[in-house]
Length: 303
Image (cartoon, rainbow, N blue to C red; front, side, top):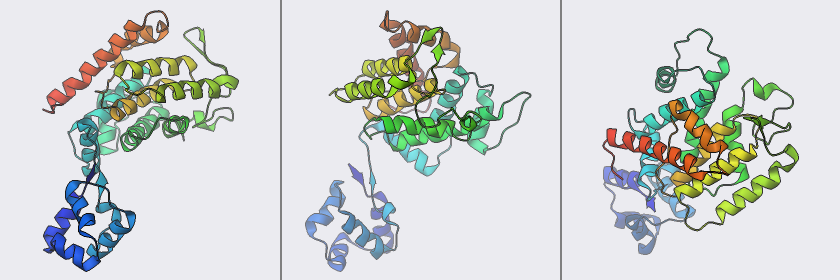
């Protein structure tokens, strides 16, 4: 589905009918009819219209999603709307996801960074906590912009790069921002996939997931759990994993979930016991869906 709202507004403002547009540009009636139907125009037609109206081609058409949550996020992101769903998702997911991983920034400080691009520094706040907060905002933007792009290793690596570039970790010779780990790591006393095996395991995981026809919340949670078992990056796996889950929820019209920091012990238990007892992690993520629904209710958004 494609939206021509800005085109329609420009035509109305300039007093140009679609018939005049067709005659002046030599466009067929079928091409012009696509505008009303929300169908895709050729690049050549879009450029001709843009030149005729003196507008950038990107202002002529934008792709519209049937997923109301995704479309709302895209609209509010474009408008830079304050106080809406996009605003609250950025602040709440960034705060909780970073805090789970040990960030010392409070939710209020996270909100201040997003809203004003400033920070009231408290004692002992690491620079990386601030950098990774800003990076996480940009990573959510990337997720919103690329939600409907098929999940791939390249997409996953890009999320890691957005999150970890320019941090202290990225200056280390053995740390690969935007690429898989070079050194083995252990999580909660559990050995993770060896660096030499990561690509093979990630490819298999992504291929198996993409082969599914009707992706459910349980499929997304399963991918998240297996991703964390592989632990493909030197650091940032939890945040990247939760960003992937957000992307895939938006991609498949599934209500996203936000894991709140104060529930991280349940979340960690669910991940640790995933291969023995799947319901623990599923229940925690479904509780995270309820958190997202409460945000929708607060904003009077009905899905």
